[in-house]
Image 1 (cartoon, rainbow, N blue to C red):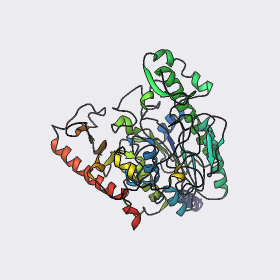
Image 2: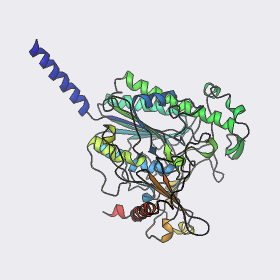
Image 3: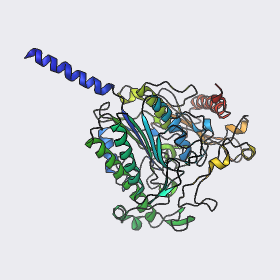
Image 4: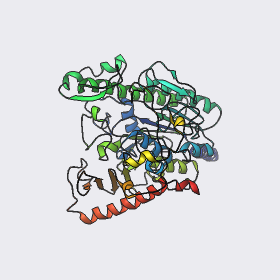
Length: 499
């Protein structure tokens, strides 16, 4: 009996080791304009996110997770490449990245994965002719939109002309994700899926049952008026914030529910244990939706309110017990982390993110290098004289949306060649976080730039400027920031692609 018990123990240990050595399935989810405070688990007074709350209670809760940029297209570039978006000229929303960039889809394909993208792309046109559509960037299939979308979205499947998909957009994306997962699992290949929701980006809309959850808000917040897009005209409008919040939170709750459908499916199919499921936002809360403000700033600003977002990881085989961490991490860390997990080398070019696998295992207590943020000054008049990096016809979008821009219901994209660097290229709001200190630099209309130094441990709301008391620290951080900018601008010239 003792011998039989020993054999069984060895056999069980072998099966366990086999399951842990198998390539994990990977699903990366991201909300649109979903800031750190807009979750139940972070103490929001109104918004209901029971699924994200459960993920926070059972997985790895990233308390200090940052978007790579305070706006959407640049963050998405950092997410896929592990590099700061300014390296590839993705300066702002509506600026594409470049065909030579190496995305995580390419790396995962080399590791034997089948990959798909669903939802918002916003890194160039999704049509078949685009050299930066998801397929061109090595996703095997995609159902995507050039920008954001609401109920009944128009989406392009694998670059075809867009078609309308009736229903709630987050649920549609998750339905497509489940279809892809099931078909890939049957082929005995690991799956890699990127799902970028259109919610809760304005203009807002929601299903009646979700709106009803927040029927009390219009009366509670009727005094403040906010600016956003009209669903009726596609142009700007001003509305009472309570009405806006009711619709915004309905979108967040619908997105949360869709994530729950995905989690339930993974469990039912026996896939949950060895699937890495990740969620984050792409930037901080937009100004129209900002209600509780534990952090300074909103979307579009390099203060923490513009870049700190929800961050959650579930992977029961690797993270069997719930944990939370204050170690700072960002969207730029995703690619180097995946490289380690699937045994692939980093791309041979500057990478701004770091490998977070020690954090997954509870072996990282502090970040090993700084975090950098930089809104490039893309309104420089000289930009208009530069040569387009991609033929403008190929940068023309096809998928319609409610919000009009220049009278158009679709979006076009920019990216310019940048062969030379001038002093003006170093400008724009920028920040560095090293340890618990954060240096923020803004140009002013007159005089020297405004420099602010914050101790994020003692002052997470960034209210006390320590620039005079900690002059040596500020100087060292500014030097480090400038050196990093030099590296980024060298990449911007296209030098990384000439190896």
